[in-house]
Length: 185
Image 1 (cartoon, rainbow, N blue to C red):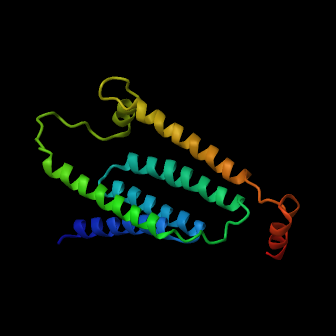
Image 2: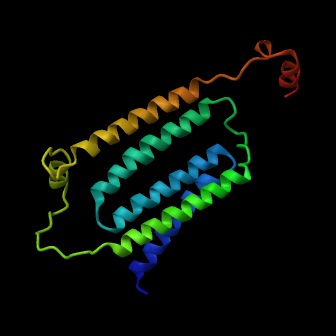
Image 3: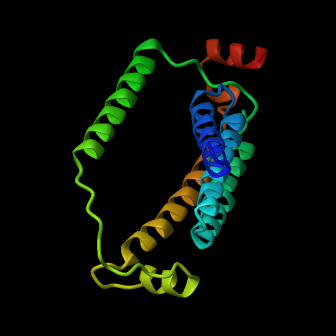
């Protein structure tokens, strides 16, 4: 096993470990930090493949944009340090079944795919060519995904504002029995 393979496996472990910890962590802030590690691992994988521009976009858009907005919205909520409720068993079993089903479908699809070598000349992956291809409206352009990413950033911004604006109900607005319990906490 050469060093390139070892680096790939380390990055894959970072990405998968961060993703699994992000969805299983009980504290929401820790979950966001694990998501940050997973997204940084993906950017490192792009750097490892010598696709520096996409790695920089990954860091700027997802690490610098989405995760920072998520962390700000967590801090702006009233109970940012509290634990999330434990998931019920049926939901956990359904998630495990859905994950296994998706993995099986992916493996089946890849095994049935006939990969054919092409004679086309590859495009040099520099910033000029990537920008031209990304903003092109031709058949092989990426204008639509580029706009979808901008909508994703807008949705993350609106979502973080909505999460931040949720207020904790005051004891005066609750029924009398619930108000006593809220005051005890």
